[in-house]
Length: 205
Image (tube, rainbow, N blue to C red):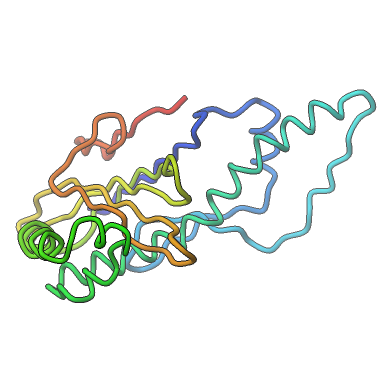
């Protein structure tokens, strides 16, 4: 599947016309690695040098308040995505020990070692066992109560079937960990859908 889609939800789901104008002028660039879905990175470029017309300072401050979470999300996502990819690679390789270590310590403590082992061996590893690659479609949303992101993705199996799943990566006591993985789970309004023309993604506007 050579076509790809990266879908972003920002919590408010829209951009004001002035904010859209500012975003278009910012030094942002898309970069696609050889083995990962497209990500958005901030490039080094001179500031566009905005000036504030007299009487419009409150409007510019409002736009700046909207713009900050918009940019923060894009800067932070690659770090969390790297953890998600590392976890998926470990699960596909059948490395139960690494998969378990990458899970949230709080989750492991609450669930207990036996339940975690059953979850890893009984659900996670079998789901990723036929792993061939990740489909080039991902919807990314911020997690609600803790710093982190949910990645709504598809695994492509050896016979080229799509299997939806969700992986939550959060910040926990200074480390990025996997808080939950929902396997064979399609989430309406979050997952993109593969159609003949490519990917049809949710509209957050």
